[in-house]
Length: 206
Image 1: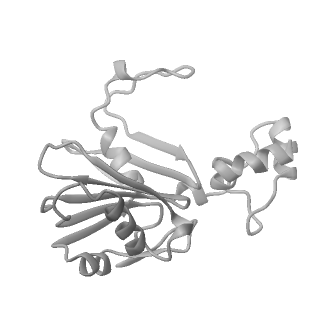
Image 2: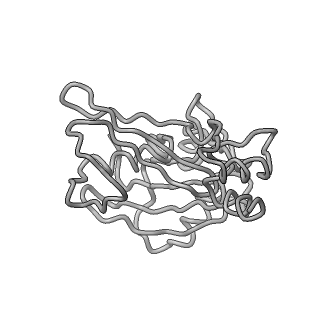
């Protein structure tokens, strides 16, 4: 599906990391780590990354970019940054045969497909549920989440925007904190608490 070398990118609200995979089975080579706010758009950041990785070999022929945002059309707005990302535009800018944009937790969920019980460290009571769904979660600038859902003999990856659901208190102490939390656009969402900025909100509320 992808023509090598393949440019890979992990683009969040604060940082964008780029690498290059030279051929099938090769280890990714890191190009650079760019601050999202330092560039007006993703193509400028990619140009900077390719320049910094000048000895990386041939120019990329295709790309797959994992971005922190809802994939809802040909042009995607980053949730917590000003960039708009369009695969077709990036392909044109760099003469690529293909440019694919996915939610950033799709590859995280794919990586969880081969995790075995002995690879895990249980936290609290964890009854074994064979064949159940798996969920991957991660706080960063925002809050990422995706699920692996059994479908026939396969696992379907479902990306979500679970960070934008409302969060509520579960006991008296949490209720006190909840009332003191800074609202984001009038709401207390999962992302407003379980994220980098959320730590500051929790600290202020406590």
